[in-house]
Image (cartoon, rainbow, N blue to C red):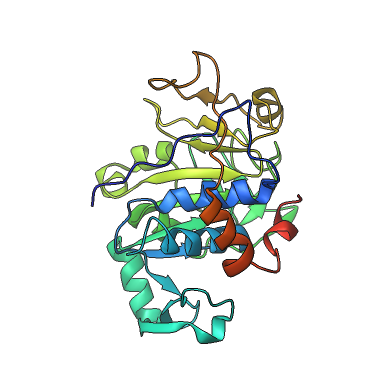
Length: 276
């Protein structure tokens, strides 16, 4: 399906008044699913869950959502009670795994470490044989990254998370996939990385992470200082910022802001993941 165009990026000098950092993060995460068509969204984290539901209610009506257990659901317009969601289909775990292996899912995962080529670590910190900290384990990350589109959500942008080299490879990055050959690269696609500071992707010739936009109130220097490696910068588009400048993440539209605040997340759980 052809990916639809996103609304224009915010004017860097005129961010929308009253929009919180968490709400810009929701918008940035929602954009990851733009144009995906009838595909299962698998958001991990509060902000990604709000974002997937916002995308479904606005520019991605074909997106499939799950209750996280065994059902495909649709939120009824105007309802803030998840118990009133409409059931659209049955999705037991074995069918969920089939979707994952078949590429019919776009997951937004977290990462304890993420390097410049998109290798993700959720397994252990330190020497893998004597780790300083044991984490979740690789779980489904290898299959996710090799079989369907993957994005990442990092609620705390830090050089401890965005590192030159991960301690353990859980999700496969572009350099590792290339080393493994066509069997790994055929369906490998890392779509975007959203943090509490910025939006990043891997659309460079060598698939090295680049800075696409910063959230209003954030500077490029701040992002660079809090990243453990050198970031590439996105090339300016027609009518966009001058060479060497980075645009701001777009503001939510008034309707998107209403949906976030009044319908999808009226109790502002997003602000507990990203400080206002």
